Image 1: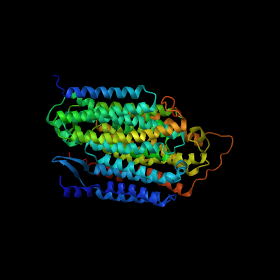
Image 2: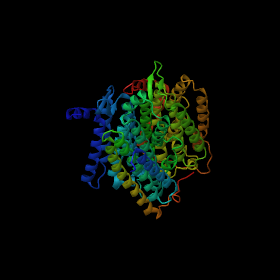
Image 3: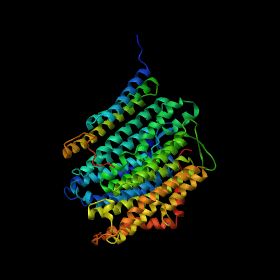
Image 4: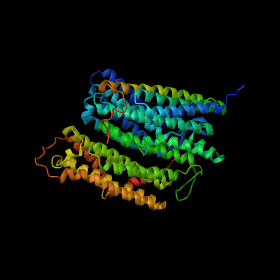
Length: 500
Length: 103
């Protein structure tokens, strides 16, 4: 590899460079400005906008960059990666706005420089994760993401809840990434390579002991399963989501999960695919039965998430279990092993971004005012928060997946992919799970509007900007619920995973 | 004379890996749990280097091990800071007793 090649390859990672530069600028500005931290959120927003524009410009590129040998490289720049980068950027912009009005984050004003630079550390990790084509780069970027999020989960240092969340996160995270690294080392020993594409051609060319390969594959899935909080690697999720500051919880539940899914899909599709037929179904190399493994994981994940959510009293914890259940639904899109399944996941993520961030945002605004996230404290609150109540209703109905919200479209896309793959039993289980989920989502709405309370609750004072902001999250859900062609076209356009 | 081959290295690494997992599962002290995680990471390192040496894969394995060592140090720093913070607020680092968040 010569130096000219290296420099010309740098142009393909402009979004990552923009994020890294913003991180450095935040640190420097924080040092120069001293006690005045007002500029930091704006610098973050500008950096994110620039990164977003650079990602959009990159659509249509399909290239391997940073070659390590003739037919292997570190990163694959393609539409699939750019799509997930867009999701990461959009959710990060929302998170910066969340942080501006979060009481928990405001209480740490003196350390805002650290806060925003760690957020950019997470974004940088996710950017590299979604376009990594090398197991070691995947591992390093996942650790970059994890290390920043461990600290952010416990950012309010004097809060016991925060500290406990970050301790649990770091222990579970350390173990699962260690197990994943062990799996990578076995794959390296078998094939002599860590490049996804090279491993694929080696597995196709010669036969390896299938037990060893299965073990290595499962070990690697532990790492990915931890990031997307799939059962049985989900134990950290409820505790961390409940304990961490709400903006960070929302960020973990959307962006970090999206990056985890992107890397999981790329890993399975690139390493194990043999051919893709005209109908878009993948034929995997006959070494590991991924279909059964992922169906098992997904049914376990959604059932556990939905049933555990039934008896939660804390709204954040309930939303944590609900996000586990949603990870289960989305895993089905991987399990069908077809292009249609991937499109379904991509549509699901756009919708999930709006509905999950929205639900967490309303919870945060209410928690700022009444200082509690208990579902019982929402009794009779409907009249005190007219706009937020309606918005929360939209978010929750969309999370259930009922029309006319976009959640319905996401679920339908997933179900169609399942029907096309002839997985009727799994489809029935999923629908039954959705029915169970209605109970715990609607319970909140019942507390808001239908429960009679003795004393009238006072109006909550919600900032005008925050009201506008809630509309920004709620209106797209209704609009996409009725006019959904653009997101489906966008997802189809972004399907292209490089090298197949 | 006994010849040291790949199998010996793999046995050591799998033993380290198992001991690490055992430490994570059984130890109550958070620092001990973190040491278990370090054992897991180092067992993977032994694997990388042994495979690289005996499989003629060049120096790639050694290079990966260097990356992992740096990462393990970073992770230990972050994790110990978190444990220190727990100790300051609760005066206790027994992972079984830190359970205010649970079902």
